[in-house]
Image (cartoon, rainbow, N blue to C red; front, top):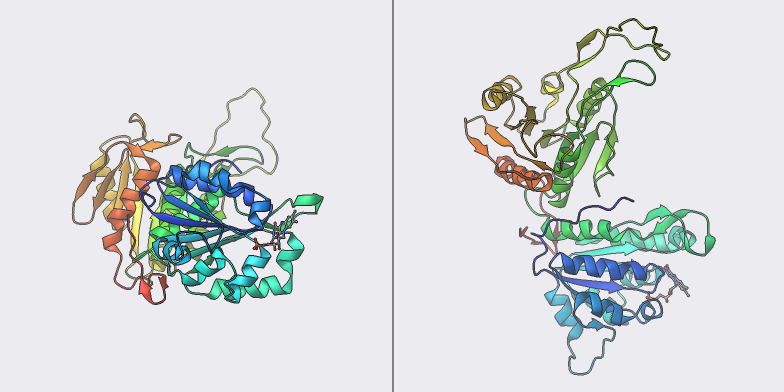
Amino acid sequence: MASRPLTPRRPWEDRRVVLGVAGGIAAYKSVELARNLTRLGAQVDVVLTSSAKEFVTPLSFEAVTGRAAHQSLFSAGDSALHIRLAREADVVCVAPATANLLAEAAHGFAGDLLTTLLLATEAPVVLCPAMNHHMFRHVQTQANLEVLARRPGYLVAGPATGAMAYGEEEGPGRMLEPEEIVEHLGRALAAGPPWSGLPVLVTAGPTREPLDPVRFVGNRSSGRMGYAIAQAAWRRGAAVTLISGPTALDAPVGVERVVVETAREMQAAVAKALPGSRVVIMAAAVADFRPAATEASKIKRNGAPFEIVLEANPDILVETRRSRTPGAVVVGFALETGDLVTNAGAKLKDKALDLIVANDPREEGSGFEVETNRVTLLDQEGNTEELPLLSKAEVAERLLDRIEPMIGATGAASRTKGGRPRSRSR
Ligand SMILES: Cc1cc2nc3c(=O)[nH]c(=O)nc-3n(C[C@H](O)[C@H](O)[C@H](O)COP(=O)(O)O)c2cc1C
């Protein structure tokens, strides 16, 4: 997997993460997880089971976290260690979560420091299973996972499917990569009203309009802006569907991605996902025109000029207007190379949008194929907010901050633990 940018700092600063490490092969990856979390600004308290120490030493964790790694329920001088760690935690993560650990947690066993603190904590718990695929598929492991996944405040993240240790064939049981686990933990820390469980639809990337089997008319959109928005909305707790044109990007963690090619395919996918979506952010650079004819075989050159006749593609925002959920917040993007505010303002009205994000790709650091963007936000009340040049991840956060108060009071309830609402601290 290509390396992903780590979650921006805000949710992590001084947050307390208890990282439980059980005795599986994937324990070596947990050292990197502990290092990543520490680099993001979290205080990471590692708790190892006695089997975990067969795979990785407490010293490795102490070296990357700068904090003591705990191994025993009965430690000299700190008789309430399990209660203290449980109480101080903002989130508890078990990675790897072995079959044994899952069985113990599902049945409420408290035979060591890690399982005891799992019973004592009120913080969200993220379990990252990792084991041989036969062990994972075993009916008892599946039953244990079902119990745990239903438990309020618990999240089972993964496993992925992939190569197994000992030359076994591929199957489900690989622990998620540390970067993906960081994303799940960031979400457990940041999720809250009005985003938790809120259905959000994002479009991203270019569309390709075929000319023949090998050529297409397209544009320079990389998809980065829409992907950053989808990831940021998911981190806040939203249930995100991302409809994406062809891009080179990995699917954002936790997001349901639907890949399409042409504008008409994107329109169909949007029409399907729109009912029920409470926030709709159309960041895709949909081709305005497509070749009027698509040749069945490759067009040959013969020395003469070749003319392409283009016809208009549907305007997805206009065409799907009637399928919008009443009260949904609908946000469009306007790419303009002149008279930015006037042109974007006209689009805002024509397409009945709540907000439009305008940018000029000719500006330094703006638009396609770059990591940054300088945008202006316009709303129906005529308010204009010019944002400075920011990373696309930061633009996404600022856009969601702007959308947040526009989301109606009927947003899905936040995930709570023991009935206690957890506020999103950002
Ligand atoms: C070499 C080796 C690798 C193992 N890898 C895993 C694993 O990846 N996942 C798992 O669930 N158990 C694995 N086990 C089995 C656990 O170590 C064993 O069930 C142990 O009791 C787990 O204890 P804990 O859950 O308290 O850490 C492995 C055992 C050995 C000897």
